[in-house]
Length: 586
Image (cartoon, rainbow, N blue to C red; front, side, top):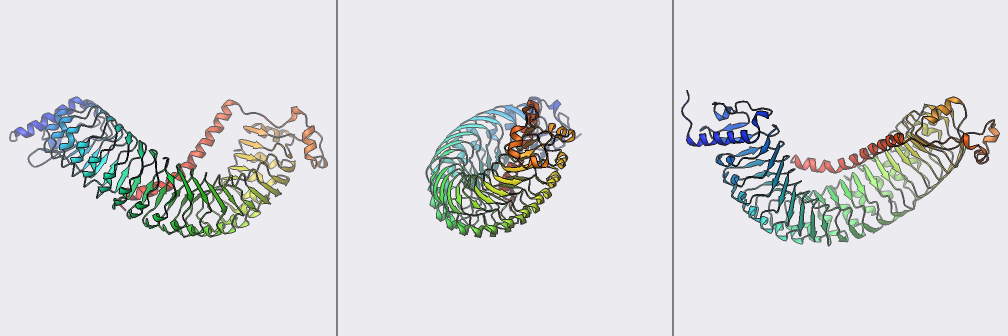
């Protein structure tokens, strides 16, 4: 038999037994050794020192249920306590404030509730505290400002309320503070500008108000600052140009106003800047073209005006640029064709004018380009046929004219093409039948002429085709019956008509939503050359139009939502790359 346990080890054993009984230890995924006479170090998840005292208790994701026992406060040598990812509920025990040796406390992803114990201000060795993804409530204790060794504090995704304590400015070793997705209110404390080692501050998804403190320009080590989705007001402080370590800044979805500070040109390490969803006005600063590391810049949903700065062509690392929904004017800068890493460009809903620059055909990385709802005029550049990575192109609701370029048949990656509501003329290019990845094509409300090319029957992935309100003519080619994925087909208000043979009509009936007319019975080729009369005289019983059933429409909507979700995920991935690199410490 071994030597008798000391009184302190016996007390540790009793505390662990209390944990087992309070959290239904019999149902744990692994309880090897628990409640046995074996040394505590042989119990699953327990690490002890040479004297047998408990140093670490690690039972994360082990199916613990029930409440946290106050008896764990007797583990006075405990350094690491990890109980994250279980189903624990109830309150945080104030008695745990006696854990004077504790360095890491992780309780994230449980169902804990109640307030944050002020008594935990005695955990003076605590370095990491993660209570995220619970149901904790109440205010942030000002007393926790005494936790002068605290490096990481994560209280995100709870129901915490009240103001941000100015007293937390004394947390001199704090590097990461995450208070996002709570119900916190009140201003941003100017005193927090004195946190000398803060690198990551996440306050998004609260109800914080007031202005951005100019004093925060002194946060010399801050790398990621996210204040999005609050009620913040006032202007963007020019003094924040001193944030020399800043790599990611998200101030989106607030009520900020004023202009974009040209002084921010000095943020030389900035990689992501998100200011969308505010009331910002004024011009786009040409000086921001000096932000050589910038990868993602989102300014959509503001009141910004003026031209697109040609100087932004120097943003050699820019991958994602969103300026939609502003009041921008002027021409599309040909110089932007030098943005070789640009993957997404959204300029929808402005008042941009002039031609589409042929030079943009050099944007080798471009995957998404949205220029819908502007006043862009002129022709479609044949040079854009070299955009091999382009997946989505939206030029709808502009003033484009002339013909569809046959060269665009080389856009091998193109999945969505919207050219509706322009004044495009001429025939449909047979070469576009080579667009093997095309899923949606909208050419409605233009002035296109001629027949539908038989080669378009090779578009095997096509799900939506809208040709309505054009001057097209002729019988639809039988090759269309190979388009098995087609769910929406509109050719109404054109001279196109559907053949009456059984094979074509049978295929047409399997398309979920169709608008158009059948060819008139006995029509000759000469008759089809007068499309408007033939369509008007076709009896209603022979109209090639049917309405999808509710179940069919539900399926079609689900398909559209999946595709929209895919696009959103791709855009979000551009932003997450930055935070992943920072999280990895690169």
